[in-house]
Figure 1: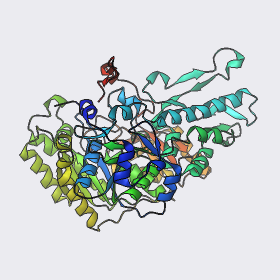
Figure 2: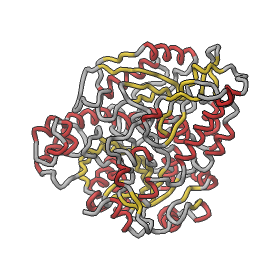
Figure 3: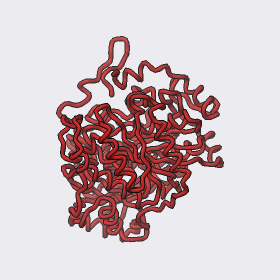
Figure 4: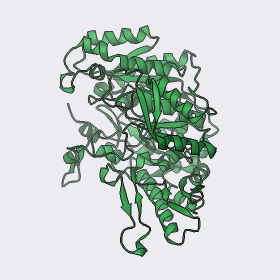
Length: 557
């Protein structure tokens, strides 16, 4: 079997202007071209979409990720292609990949096999520069903050209470905790500082939640960067940083359009991680896709305990979106892994391990059902899966009131997704959707955290550090408690311990820190040992990536 990049590079792409004209009715005057195969939707055109009727919204999510891989993005792409194949006007709305995992351990995020978006190599690398713009805007604010302190500190900023962090779009553990300002007096105030990865930054969240440029500037103005000596917050607006930051983001806020291998449109924009951020593509991209097609297929990062929860409790609530159905992706291999089988043994038939690990799928089904939306469970099929194993999963899902379909899009493209597409249409037409978030906004911060911890994760209790309790009290006093909470947690387990596989119950969720992303409009809750600046593995994917003398990229996956 050819590698993903080989399949992608052999595909004969169509000019993106042709794809947009033929599939979406978008003329070239409404596009801002980035070469032949990438473009952004213009601001003028985006304004015309606001009055258009919206299509149906399909959320693709998954069980907790395993080293065996689940194929959530692959399934999303294949499903959208399959819907197009059977006569529906489907538009994808995906996230942009981060360079961190691309050169680290996870790889890219363009799908796989014959269900990919292209140009795959450009998407996984610099793409249209959105992440660089976000990084620059973030670090401009950091520079203005430190410069203000250096130039007299008229706002009385307490250097010990600076909360704004620098960022870069790369895994680099050495930058988690640093000291800046060393050297001469002119080199700035000496203080402790930190880096986070760009996809965890508040600027990324703001860009993905902003409705337009005006909303973007309004959200930027609310960013809390530090506290003064009286304990009052200092914002980006106070530092007169909003205009210059918005200028850096003026193009990044426009959604990008590329194509699938089958030349169907895909809007790819924004990319917050779901384990340390809110895990969804931009509101603008999703709404554009809804206005341009009969169906919008979108995904949320990692498992349903993270990405789907944040999509449903944060994004849908803020943007006024209502999902029409959720597709829950699983693999036989991932369920056997949750049943305690080692990675190198997963291709061997083992129904006992499958029965043991399927409880992970069960919990995610229950979680999605708690939002009162119809569910379709799909198995991303591998050649090693037996009929007995597949039937076991099918019967398990049907007993729990879920629709079920096999997905073979990796191997067969749209043809392998027709069964799934048909089940998704049945779910949409069932009129059984009564969507509602799982908690109201007017309850205390702790109660929101504990609702998610107990109802979605299965925790028995939540324990808070002294600093977390202090900050919750502080945020409540500031009137910032009437917002959603965005919990940062390991993606590998329903708990905050990545080693607890399957369906852990009654465990303690450990909250170590809490802070406000006031521009984004939510409170971030850090649990366990999750890091907002990941590190690289012992053998990073970067070791295998190269470019030939004739300019062909190899080793990218």
